[in-house]
Amino acid sequence: MKNKSNLLPLLGVTLVWISLPAIFAHQPLPKTVEELQELAPKERNELQQKKVRFNQLSEEKKAEYRDFNVKLNASPNQQRLRSVMEAYTVWLLNLETDQRNRILALPLDQRLQEVVQLVKQQKEQRFKELLDTNLKHNDLLQVGQWYEGWLDVQNENLTQLAKSIEDEVAQSIIKQTKDPRQRSTVIVAFLLREQGDSKWHEWFGDWETDVTKLMGSLSETAQFLYASAESDQQRLQLVLRWGYYYFVAQSMQGISDDELLDFYKNKMSPEDREILDRQLPANVIPMLRRFYFQYRMPQVIRRMLVPEERSSE
Picture 1 (cartoon, one colour):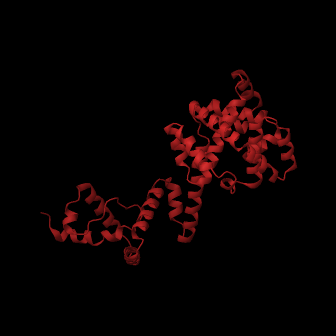
Picture 2: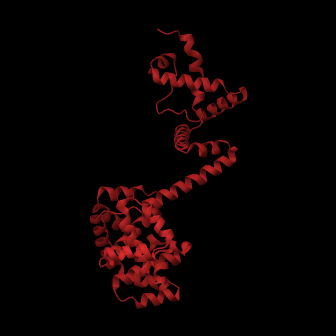
Picture 3: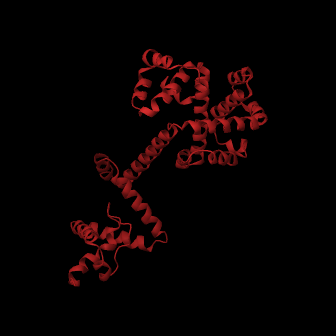
């Protein structure tokens, strides 16, 4: 058996290491010499490295970590706090080295602000990528069938809601749109543009039930995409984007590949072409069709259905 006296210094600092960056473990730290001896060689080696790093700290920093650990152990939310610390460490280690070093070099208050801002940007980017993910053909057909049925059921309700739209141009477009489903789509778009989505569940009380039925008809991939959205607002935007994709697909059925190629070569903006050229091969044609669809739309309709284009026009 190994000499216990050689293990005691290592054991003495294990409870402190939990507060040091990048040293969290998924398994509980050993609390006795016997538990320490039972660790696998790799785990014991990692623990030894942590001890070395701890010993290299100044006495002031050691005291700071010990005090922190005492407060952490005394907290009624200890497990939650440790989980947050572990998640933060994993997130930090996944950053590029330069970015991680820049964050760690900041004073604590500035570091917190930087982390919050960076996490927000990462979430926004993930959701943008989620929105741009193309559905499989069968899923798109299911979305279209569901969306058309939903519009039919909501026709009378949407007609009443349209009266709350104040924009005169919008009212003119609504009146000029004769097809009931297209008119309902226009109403939804103008409601969102003018009033946002905060009243969505007030406008459509059965929305959650309706979407649950839709999800049950889609593939596991589509269901996973929906589940990946992090809030009710994101899930709403995702379903509406899918409906928009179906709208594009229906409108582009008679467009030939030659027309798309001519648009790509001669009429597409350099900025949009650069975006398209960065896509995976499977995404190129669907995205090209959406760009062409937006190009053909009248200006006012384009701004209504694709409001994010305003910043690039």
